[in-house]
Image 1: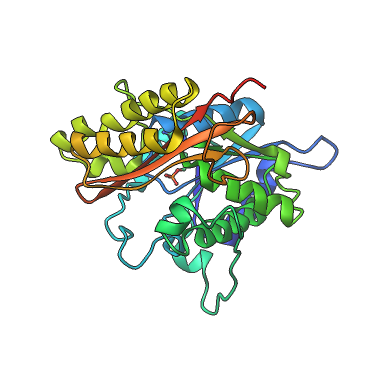
Image 2: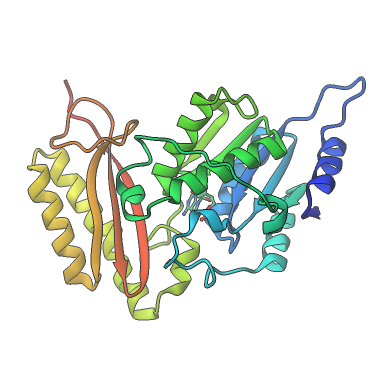
Length: 292
Ligand code: AMP
């Protein structure tokens, strides 16, 4: 596996990977990450390997998607350990740009995807999805993958990226080649996240209440319970389990992410963000629509 951190090196390495001349071009899959890799990330890599000739992984802790009081400085960075994990998974190229390579002096552009970015995490983290859309658009242009893999763990992020790719007529990758991968969970159900390592042992044990309470709420809603009351019960269960606060607990349309007051006949999603100690955890799960 080759690791590159500047654009010229990236272009040379990609040209080598793609091949060309008389033979058909190799297919390239991209897996963007912020590093501190866990089984969730590695699952994306495995899916990517099965879908393409070569996998390019990126590791970039993107300053533009962190708010002024967020954890940019504290975010775990472990490039050597991550590189070893990616190499063991058969990744061909690691793109680990410096901040200067990604945002050279004078960088002035911003991609903002209205609507789908506005609620949920977008409301709690102003500017976050502009930062995500801008960096992912740049990663797509830099690598020009045939296919790209993202986790459903960040469900709103996936919706923002798909909307951006559709609206901007991106072709590398095309919107249909942006693949969402189901959330990988710990044995007790907690969604794997690089931020789980911020949790003390007590907080880590309490955090399992999040997926548990979500499953309980989903069973109730699917069984016909009133949505607002069920979500209030979910929030109360999290506070009782030791969470400090709940940013949101929302039933939403799976595609538009518009909040739903009642379960309808179209696919829905339960999305929650809650804080335990100083750590903000997010999770989401599918809710089976009402039979029409
Ligand atoms: P991050 O490094 O947190 O920016 O995540 C990089 C990619 O891995 C994103 O597409 C995430 O949605 C995905 N990801 C993170 N955690 C998980 C997980 N537990 N299961 C599946 N995908 C994940």
